[in-house]
Length: 327
Image (cartoon, rainbow, N blue to C red; front, side, top):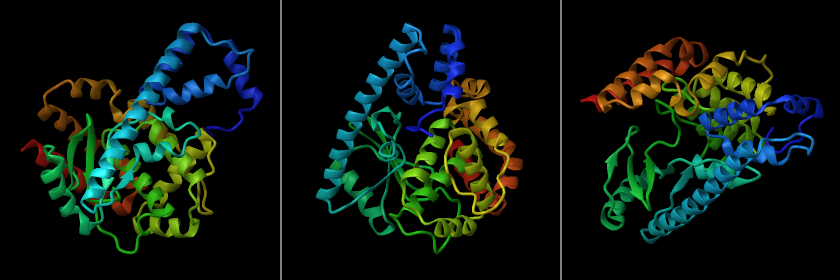
């Protein structure tokens, strides 16, 4: 688990690594967008494990860049929060910057977009406020939300807090630890069933389980309501086996995490490093969307096995969003 002591026996294998091996490890970290975590780990190695200078300097430069980005995004979020406050609006921030607070060294968690959710009663007012006062171009989003540019950052304003394809009553109140866990959980499932998901999101989940004061029974009930209990156990099995987490299995046997490991290894961060996906991303938007549709269809067996209760709703929603973007 990140921030925990690693047994000496485990570390001993690092003594035999050559520079090419360290370069491979660094490349893998970039694919999974966890270079900052690798830098932190390298800094904690005992003195008898020597990291090649070029690798060490590259990791250091990357960490400096991450810290700079974290500082700038924090300032942007503060300015955005103040802008909304002037209109009497209070956004709930999701994922990225919010997840970084779970880490022992928040700036080393790589950031992407800024994700925001507003309660239903504030959503339309937030959109109108942005159009009238923030004066940024408003573009439609996939879940009925929208996105804008603010201080150079992509800001996704979500209509739905949970990445779930249908409305389910009785879910944990927002904000709460159980709601945050369910939101992160469903987000990973959605991407695992589409283009792919990377290790960064799995690290977020492991730390959320470790740091958030959640009620296991309440969380289990929410997963059952959403039809993702088996998926949650498989996700927990991966976190426990590969990241040393203490994620809940709800008193049931562990699942084989190999199918999820395969997805993570194959494509890296949101599937962007899958060789066929890389080629698709360099093409026109129409061809990129066709590639995504193909990936959705290929994920049906995986989704049916681990989230049978949600598969139909999930695929219908993802397919609808991608098909609409083609027209």
